[in-house]
Image (cartoon, rainbow, N blue to C red; front, side, top):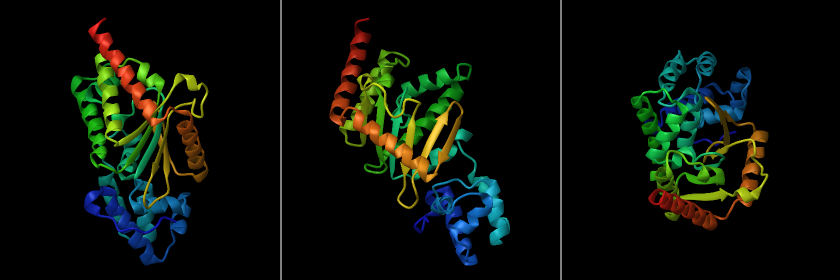
Length: 280
């Protein structure tokens, strides 16, 4: 069961629904497990809704209104909160990311979104959507850069990223774009704002050959893992799955270069890109 916490509704659109859900449930004397059972979700999931780390979908809201006698409050407000600037498959993950105290991830093929520069993100979105208008690409880039403001806080969330060497070597845009992108990641590491490790080609087979990993931890809710593919993504809270992903990340952290050696490699590759641009 999620530990109780009073939330500030003004700081998080989901906080209002979470607080009201907790108060309505307690007023009725219903446990988290009992409230979630008819929806085939765990008491832990209900706790995550109350903590504001998960999005309340309409079918859940309608059930809560019926069981808790809240006169349609949750359904009405659920529709308003559901509006998001992020794609449907990523919206809930972005909201959870904003509430996380720690984000640990492995990036197999590209620099993660929270660490991307404008030029790098632009090239990525253009590759994803080759026929989109410039305005559409620009909007997507701005939304991605806005996410990075999570790092404006000097300590929270902890961001620990393992980047495959493939992401350093694949030229996105140009050598100039890559040099800037790697200098940006290295700068955040030098400022001690993020922990970055590089998984070198020499590591051979590893625990996440099948793709990326992302684990989010929270002060007042169980951890979540996020899995994604082209135009799809899912947040998972199953304890067995979370434990497996946690182990995989731990193995990758042990296999990757140390943060110090990783920074040296990042800066060395960035320098190679800079010299390549100057001396084609």
